[in-house]
Length: 440
Image 1 (cartoon, rainbow, N blue to C red):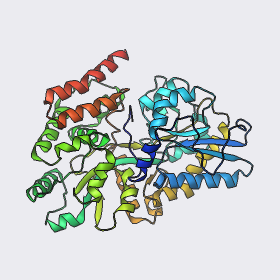
Image 2 (cartoon, rainbow, N blue to C red):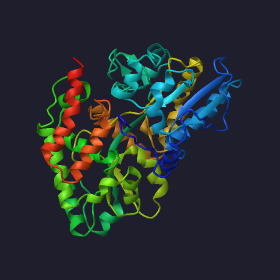
Image 3 (cartoon, helix red, strand yellow):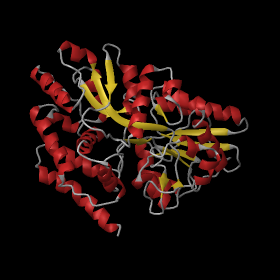
Image 4 (spheres, rainbow, N blue to C red):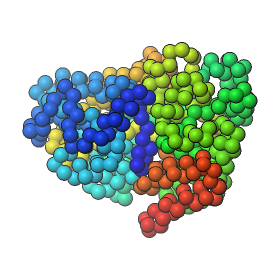
């Protein structure tokens, strides 16, 4: 995600979105909901952008929300434009500062994205309406951190500039059939996790799916650091509340453990050039029995895996994991129909749409696990809530610094290619320390 990692929502359809990335951002990819923008500003047209993959849980939920909106606003035309993540990520500042801004759009959360646009005055302050419509009561304090920003554009502030309505976190996916085939016990802690890795490797099976040319590799590095970290360390790193030493025990352990696993063949060195979809293909094709990745892969895996049993569980090596409230619905400052945008957001927070998000295999923020009939989804929601309750959601590694995603991508690739520990740590620390110094 340029400054926050691009996490596709479904394995197959994200390829379609990538192919569409060559289309100019300004070219409408309108669905049957509507077309021209000539009526914008008259209270009768809602312009909406999002980048969820077509067959994903969230895309299905947003489609249902659009249908509900149209029924409750019979005189309003909805102009929906399907974008790619990169289109919005790379061009949002320019577009939102023009008269082409949509009324409501999905946007990535974090200091370098929602926070930056809020600081630049490009997003509408939703604090009053969030309170009035009850959104701030439905979203937990933990999940709302990335919706609220201060005057510096740093998350956790007192003003709401976005509304998330789902949650996301990183967990472990297991191929249960392969564990059974090789008579290997499912891990219950870090010791048994590494024992399983060694047992698979001894049997001639590379155990861990990975993708060095995308977010999964850097997620692994951060997850290993989190296994040695506490709340203070996370707050210092993510929210600039204290000094961060990249040569300290947390990051040093992460880099060394990663190097160790590459050396033992738990990841393959040629994974360095792979994308996230390649990683899930390793798991779906049963070439790798363990995948650690976000719940955003869950729906696609459910659709794609028909020939073996699989399960999910929290990563057993850490009390903390990568995660946060989901992407934000934001209302650009130059939106022409803000009231309609607020009405649409309200529908996505309704019991009907929240339940649908859960039934489709994602994690709704305003629905209870017991209200979801999908057993597997209930397990995801319960696990997410447990992380929330113990303050176990530690955001993502590239969030603190603009452009840090590219730094992490390069550093993890260098690590997989044999770079030394100090070299990798220096590569990570340089832009972080420079950015921290620039804040003072």
